[in-house]
Length: 384
Image (tube, rainbow, N blue to C red; front, top):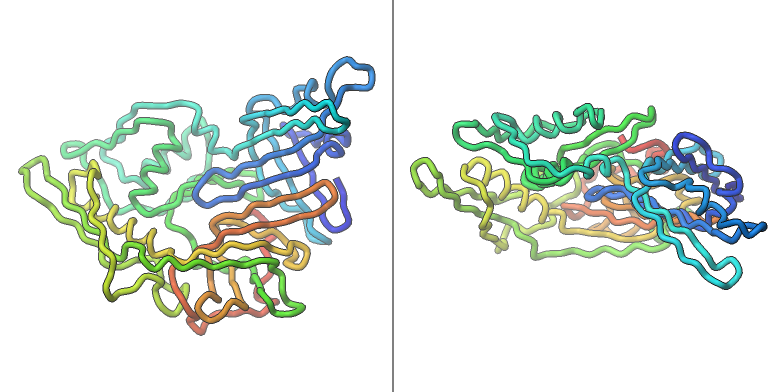
């Protein structure tokens, strides 16, 4: 479907969608998220066929269960970018008696859906959480390429055995949560699927610069920043060692992920808020220590910003799971952010809106930031 400044293509099970299907698409919605599966929703017009023999598109069974759907987008004269690679998980049809009122809504989920098809009860003895993640991602049922950072805690079978109850992706999210990690799958430019299990990668090269209220350089329509100043700064947990019934205490007093994002940590060191963690299901102090640290690290992302990108002015796609620079919102809120969520909304007339959610664990500027336009070229490829 070609518009004046934005165009898109849709592939279904490896074949380009027909012109009839493209012309029937009213809206494409893509949710790119660091904490949840990426989602795609297609809103497609359907109607009674001219000969009255059935319904267009709907009766063609094009969007069958787990059919693979890819959407690629071109902005201006840039190269086409794959926006999402996903599988059909739901179809919802609204039948209307008014002309052009009927609509088929196709919902798709990224490749994590393949990891959500079977619940398991499985033991993982003598393995670190990162080793478990690598083993699951590279399992022959998926064949994903693991992108995994090593975790510190290693359980020994004679002390404790890690037990999985649930689907593979549910289990990996539990392990990621206790380590302060993210867990997601992602397509590469080469068409491979990577399985990611690591802390947020906020210290890489920024994918671009979002500019607010700076005349002709402005590329953001709306920007709102919120600063939660009462998140837990310290966390404490007490566990009972089953071998000798001794009490073991774990404390985390500062975040470990604040380096390089701003002048000062977003959570205060004076008069801190402390939380006591309970019902952890952890018998060893080392494991509880990791979990209490993850609680403090998560709360350190105390600055959250939401807004809307002017896609044509920005010149490309804003991607989640990557850093971005922000300027024009005052010294406290300008600087480096981590993109947590981007909602892409593309209409059949070529209107393309990107709504974002950013987060940050520091305030102010380090003095090392670069906001030059030529140093902030929007990323037009899949997130690295």
